[in-house]
Image (cartoon, rainbow, N blue to C red; front, side):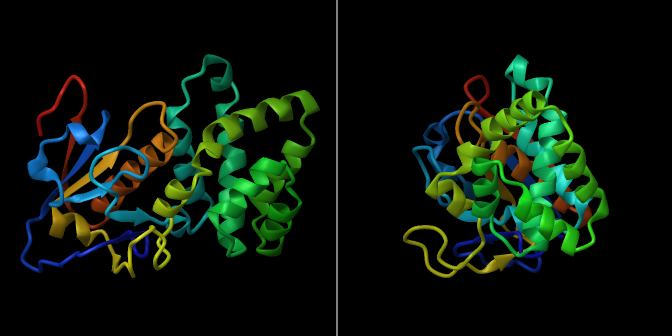
Length: 246
């Protein structure tokens, strides 16, 4: 279950709702969607024109252990396409996963993770992991510290390429389930994976090359996993410049 991972406006649970749901990935500007969908579905769209974001995803709330952090980090980096960067994606993904886990263990925020990435200072995340007896991730950071300086710099460059685009107010708001996180939005009721059944249509805007593309890819993957955990049947639909039907 997604537990406290998703929150949305004006959500009404339908106890007799369908047992299937639809996750729709929008790979073009959401304004191109048929207007019949506007206002009738959950939309995660923190930066593009069209229907405003109607729910937020607390990225860190999904992480309970190192495996969760690894999975989410892999999806965040799934949008990296630069050939020079791809060589270092595995190491960059592992480093980012350990930073995400450190934030969870230390009750830090995604903003703190981005601050660590900005500075390149691993002392605080290392201490948080060590204090919480995360021996594997701590060993990973030890290994990273023993890596030649040039290779470390290359890995950090890939981490920053994938993660620093998230350092934008609207995107950070859409990646938090805190009350009032979205500008102009009041308290948001917490949803579980059952939201997929009740609302039935969830739009995730993932336009290649945009700041939020990596987070959108991770969100879509987590929605599908949550549905699987809840025993829901999910249709996956793509709506983009070459395909506008659902």
